[in-house]
Image 1 (cartoon, rainbow, N blue to C red):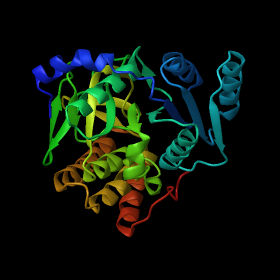
Image 2: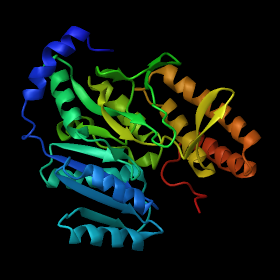
Image 3: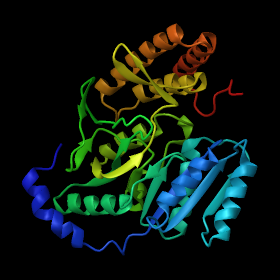
Image 4: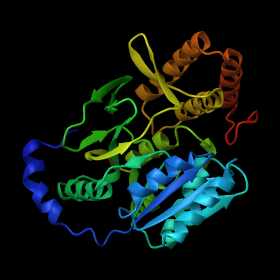
Length: 324
């Protein structure tokens, strides 16, 4: 759903005059073996845009490097809050830890980020102003998301809107656009909405957490919107590759486990419409075929995918039992 052009232009000036001083925004960044150089780049883009930063480390192998990074920024008069988990508790669990702490710190909104996401200037201001604008026009906002681009490739990711099992890819413009769901990195959520909808689903461990939350929020009458003027450098998937003219995300064999298992979980949820469920099951299977043809570690993809499918049928949740 687009806002009509005249609606947007007639109220845009008023929205810019709205005070954002009553909003306290807390950035939540979950770490798992992060690139510390990217963490530094992200922090530079984040400082001055949020009131507080919470890092949750899910037992990274390079924890000593992360700790050095934290100590260095503390020397420069910046004091993030850090949670050190003794084991990898999963993305949803760590995000909920951050949300809980943000509430303790008096935040009105949380901005959830992956460690490699870098914000452009006025990112948070654009999200707040667009949220205020949409609310003024009668929309019940569940969460706001940004326009994503890949600085390495120059690729601009389209905004996706599901129509049955089909996707309408919308090229970003200046106007806010309603999306079927928002990915977690860059997701800007009011804690009042989280109080109503609930936090992230910890059972999924990783993958589909953001999608499940988006659909759950919509079942409460909320809408997801993208603010194209809020721009963020972010790579979707471990990497991207082109197959028969289509660009697809490439994930590790372990992530294929979670994608297969959690797609079956999603299929069973009443709040998620059938077209989305059908597309995910079909395309997960097709992606597996592609990886079995192109990847060198074919056996690993097959092993983890089969295990995910099996555990999905069994209703198993949590951490992958064959995670090394």
